Length: 277
Image (cartoon, helix red, strand yellow):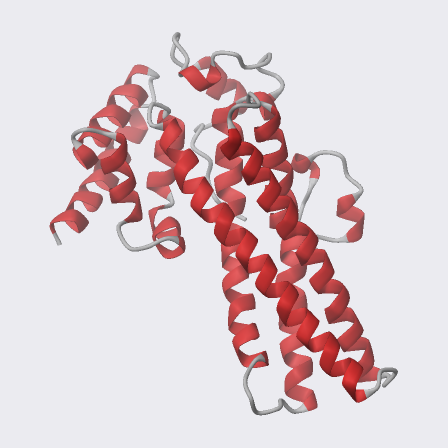
């Protein structure tokens, strides 16, 4: 997925340009070469894959609506629906070979698999008293398991189209189990979606997270609601969107990223126009 992370260069650049006084959630970070222990960067990866996951989920929901129609689909149409569903599900899970890799940053495909792994690292960085990251990991892991289970049902139904090995009642049962499993997958993602919005508020003093969210405004507005980013900034800053803009301009100016300042100002202006509208 071609989403630009907001550390604006190499990871070494990211570390070198950090403020002398780190945000509170970075205070106990591990050495800088363990970037999966740096919450700021790790949460950006979570947000990045989260957007990719929702893109595939929307495709799957569309297919599910067609599969639940009362009129039976023709065999060719049903095969086409299963093929589209297979592609979306594999984009979430990746391949079996991918699951054998040990690190999320080694994975080439599988947005949900990567999201699950990043949520695991994120929860491991936190104290046991911080329940939200642990719940994020739990929901992501459950969604991943339901995704794999869905693939099993899809393969069974696809195989039966080429070679009829199941009686009619078993085909009906497998189809219902697929629909039920997909609904469980969607439910876990919905829980995760609410949690990610809440956890985002804890990064109100992290310019990297705020800049990423600002860059991906359209994606977040589609996932949540129109003006989600505007509403999020209003919760984070007493002065709302202008306060967020002032904070970002100050922080990136202090770090020497002067080329980003016009872009930030433009994005903030667009956000304020939306507010007026």
